[in-house]
Length: 153
Image (cartoon, rainbow, N blue to C red; front, side):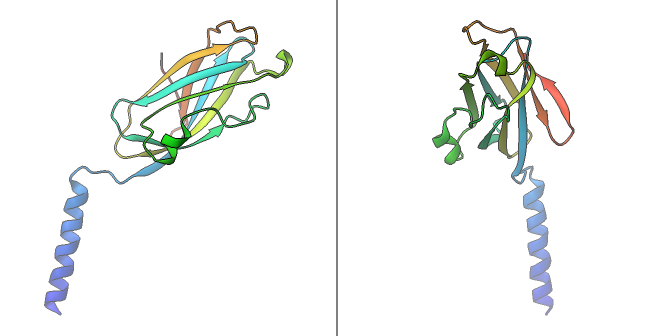
């Protein structure tokens, strides 16, 4: 019985040391991507990377605006393999100008697996009007854990 208790204590101690070596257990987090635009948005593209390499994209949802009803375009194969350490997502709409979003809109929700602390870099590649003119828009993301908005130039 003493040997069994000793082996159990050794196992618990080793498990505690293995976790104390800095290796974080994987955790999952949704990240909402928002666009603020002063003009009707007909097309957009963004890129999200993690400077620390802690992020893997495991899923993508649409933003919910009726003008963009489908999931944005992205590398589905890389996401399916869980090898998407960065993501470029884009979408367009052929809806009438009056139905396109103006102001703040959610472009997408990214589902991430994190191993360690991420350092996100979000970049708006483009946002355009129905005529194809560039829009001076800003892009942000929202973390659910603290409900804060972060801007990335």
